[in-house]
Image 1 (cartoon, rainbow, N blue to C red):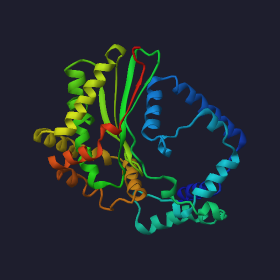
Image 2 (image 1 turned 60 degrees about the vertical axis):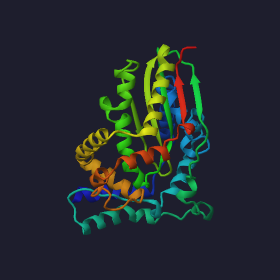
Image 3 (image 1 turned 30 degrees about the vertical axis):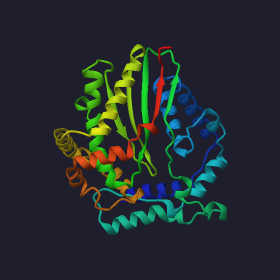
Image 4 (image 1 turned 90 degrees about the vertical axis):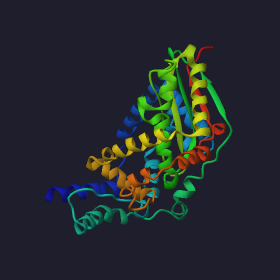
Length: 327
């Protein structure tokens, strides 16, 4: 208990009254710039950065750091950011462990107490709201971008914004749909068509990321430069056919069994439980979200999958990025 109290006091003071050392700041800025510059020599990093910019051209999600933006950060900027956004009304605290409600409440008060004693921000800063900072995502037209690179393989990524984290009625059908298309590894349609049938790529996958506003659905693969056009054609045709006709009943049942069977792995450590709990609070999800998770998956029908694919995965609004291609 003595150790815990000391740790809590330290954490609470760091959260409420951080100090930004000039020497440490410069060192971290230099390290970050070095890592960034190294990453931007790699085709995968170039492709991903370009994909996000293409999917979100007029949205903060499409912004990325640069050497210039990092270099310009000052101690004053950090302090101003902390002063504006690290306020009690914006902070959520999740606790997992062997602790009762009274002790958890006391722990939370110890952490949040000093944060409540900060000097208030000025009136212009206090008017910020999270929704204002993140405007709704709008879909644009189809974008195809090819970027030269000396790599031996083409790195191919395709994606578009599809779902926000709070859209739970659509998320569960999308989980099943993605599992069948490219989220289940060697059992997926994309793997069968691109790897097994044609040998165009060692691996291909699809996934989607859930954010406060519409997060992206994306597909990624690598192939020899001489095969990139064929791989893209097969990828697009496979997705188009899947959107048009949906999965089979057998694919649907196998997918649901696989997803439900893997649910325990999402909660097999305190850190994973904590992450899930934090998401429930941050994204304002139903408190019984995890209790009903497997039931929601089991309830997904063929019509549900077909509907979410046709309503949310519009290839006419997709971005296709190819880094390293045969000229």
